[in-house]
Length: 114
Picture (cartoon, rainbow, N blue to C red):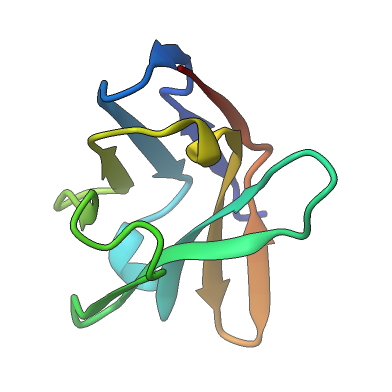
């Protein structure tokens, strides 16, 4: 069974940075797409950033220029978040597409205070 585990969430102040990690139970290159989603209280889950197996990335307009997605050569994807704003407060989830299936992690909480 494929597993994803997020880590790195924390409570920070406006303007600070965090790096989230998504560690998979197999090579990160096994997945067609790896993505980060977030869900704020009372809101729907939204796509934040994604990366294809070939390394192409896409970002939500709200995080462009502040967030960067990357991966290592083994089994971890990252989301570097700079210039954090209170509006970034949410549970962040890692998602990966393997064949016809999508796998989710358990989520990690990011809280940004002003």
